[in-house]
Length: 554
Image 1 (cartoon, rainbow, N blue to C red):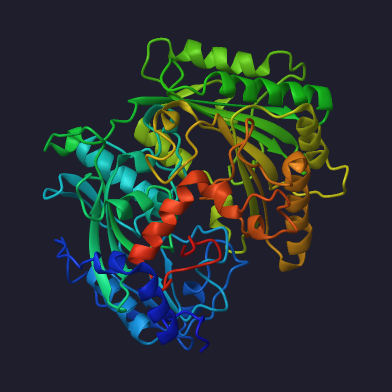
Image 2: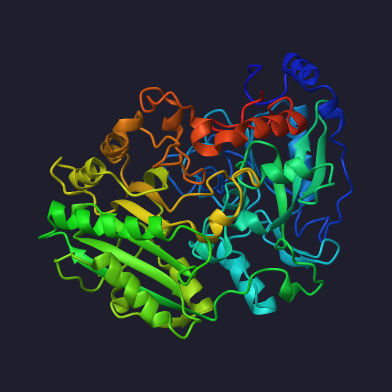
């Protein structure tokens, strides 16, 4: 294989060792207590001749298919460490799979030779040594929610979809429905257990905590939004909220709302003029810009404005609100009234699928559900996620303020079908941010996006490879026109603040699609990037863990 194919060549290893000097020597291997050091089963090797192989070399998005020499399915941190050491010693290019929701080819591509599959590492347990909840990196969100809540009555403010794996979701920052009340999931991250590779090519298992005097504190910080596939292999995340001192597991993480209120309304595309469309968009974005500060009576609100492509037939507004307060119904009603003020096309039930979401016709009048019932329902109402032919493309942006008039016109023009593009699973989805997310400083975690009001997600999905070009071209054109004023991307300025790392987009590193002069890494990490590079140099000096948007060595 080539020297840059995935292993550590002697030349690269020597260069890296010289570059980081004392930093590499300061990364000792540590003994980490394991609840299950042996694992539930021995590491499994699946190769090209095995009937299981085809299912293990493709992610959720069927555009990305790998052809590795082997897939290694493991059940313990020790097994993961052994696979990493074997790949390092054999100079094999290794990538890591957690839940499988990666939007780019970071795991499955033509260069990968070994895929380390963590999807069977799903344990969730209380760790009395660290007084924190230990969640293995292959666990999926709904399983985490179920166990934490049913056993201890607590939760983490992570994502909505049931099948998202903890591994990549947390490392990327971890947005979820409770973000305005409880912040991002990384705001409750106490520690990470990581397999790293030192300058001598040794795989080591390291525990890094948020304790200021922890010698591995920077490695913990890097995993609060620095992304996966850069610093090592996370085997476990440990969660305990800042300031939680109790040894009682029921008191160290947030308690979710006892009940949630769910509301969903829709407007038919038929009769949706540009003026009406613009009023709806300005109302929703203006409300979020005015309510971006932490706290307040709307801290428990998360809303989706589903700007669907005309072929869907509807534009939707879906809102989840903490139903614990005595005035919850009144506040939710006021929010819907604020968003719909002056929108003179009548709204009714949301009866059509919207992007990844299924129909929500029963919520035209708000309904109450217990938190766990609502979480199960919302987490599993994604019929597109179960489609074995799913293909997709994604673009994203953080917004501090609403759209300009020119941008509102661009949204309408790219969704109303005049360009001949028609896909009922294409949309521009606006989702709430702000609130407690903005209570954390920009450099306190690796996730730098701490003063935004909402985020944009342009997404399209389809099934046939023959439709790839039409859908990818639509998303690229839409995004480029929307941010034409700033070089085709949402540069950090008074209006926008870069892109969402958990919705990766390799076009950001291509001059044909990013003419802003702002590098892709600044769109993701802003001023935090140099520190991430220093952590990279200390814990992965030979760049063994890498993909197209991993942190680069300094």
